[in-house]
Amino acid sequence: APAPVATAAEVDVAAIAHRGASAYAPENTLAAVRLGVQMRADLVEIDVQQTEDGALVVAHDNTLERTTDVEQKFPDRAPWRISDFTLDEIRTLDAGSWKAPEFAGEQVPTLAEVLDVLQRGRAGLLLEAKSPELYPGIAERIAGELQARPSWVRPDPEARNLVVQSFDWDFVRHFHDLLPQVQVGVLGAPTEAELADVATYSNQVNPNQAQATPEYIAAVHEHGMRINPYTVNDAAQMRILIERGVDGIISDRPDVLRSEIDGA
Ligand code: G3P
Ligand code: CA
Image 1 (cartoon, helix red, strand yellow):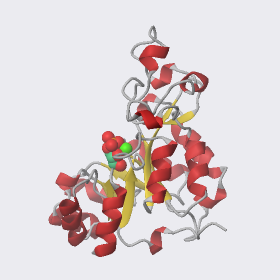
Image 2: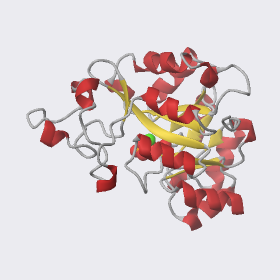
Image 3: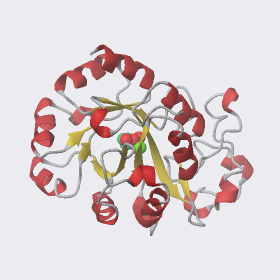
Image 4: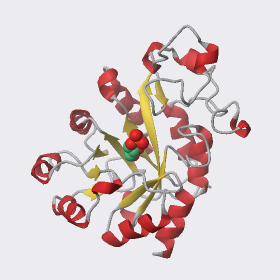
């Protein structure tokens, strides 16, 4: 039987695998998600975007050329925007070889596939809606995909650990209205004056690590929100942030992070 799901309430400082365990496996692929789970991340962070035919896929950049062989396979389709390709076309791409030959054949995953992988284990999901302004209807599509899987959207503390975040705060507010039982987070660093408004809809503020000063962490906590800085790959910096009382850390190296959290 699978291990029991770790709910948000049970997790102390959350170890969050950035784009999966992306230091070691190609970012935002199932290989990276699986490795994040294997390295005992509490949550796996992924970036979600939308294809021309409305499928939800997992990729960081708005275009496909950095992390796939799209230039070779579709030389006439520059600038290779995700929104200009169908899911079937994207599924022909190799999303692993750029990282290392052993990952040849990794595909750009769908959100559904990532949910399937995570559902086999304890880890939760930090789902970033990337550039939602490019994808009309993406909030409703993400909400629909999650609602089809009740363990993620149960309106009680036994729900799987799920947070939906974005740099687009209007998206975050809208998503909160769509699925109020799901935790949401704003990416970036609202000013202290903005925090009161952000706290009316958001559960988290997830800034760049440079902005996670003791004063800023205290301000976010005073407004009743959690704070998970990104992208922290240096063990000494992890220790400093744990000491300052952050709620989670987003890292490409979830194995290093796990041992810093467990040793703290
Ligand atoms: O989860 C935070 C982090 O992923 C935001 O930046 O560019 O890596 O999506 P980026
Ligand atoms: Ca991200």
